[in-house]
Length: 193
Image 1 (tube, rainbow, N blue to C red):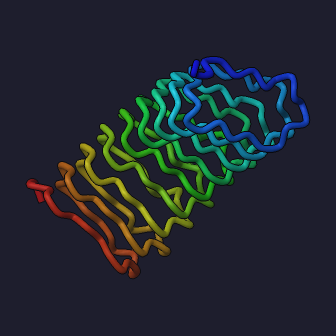
Image 2 (image 1 turned 135 degrees about the vertical axis):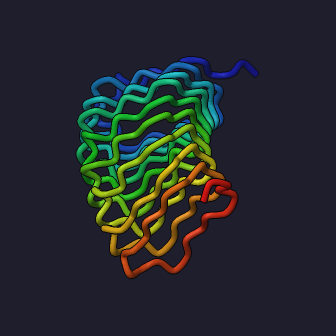
């Protein structure tokens, strides 16, 4: 009953998908896996994950680890990222222009550059330490959850597709939702509004 601590799959250069959920790994080597499209590393003890250069990756699910570093440079095909329930202080999404869904709730994010993510429809950044976000580049966004942060303003006035936005439990003093759309906008527990 010894848990698997280290996983080295770099010797499998043609690997397309990898699932190593709840295995207890704390270290993984993915270097050279240029064919890898899907990876799922849920519920492990990883503190860092380097996916740089794995340009065929479309789906990354690494939630419920202890990640303090997630490197996703050069992932132009990335469509789905779930890194919830980690310890991430930052994520660089600037080289992931085709991402459709980002779930990074329950981390320690203090800032995040989401400009240039025109294809992103779902954005979940709930329960972080974010003080400001510029939503202007999220032209395809339909669902936004930024509840339980430290945001003081929320402006989605230029986003015409938003159907749901949750801004509960922030420090909002300014809200602009004049986009003519929006089925549900939640602003509960913002004592400065």
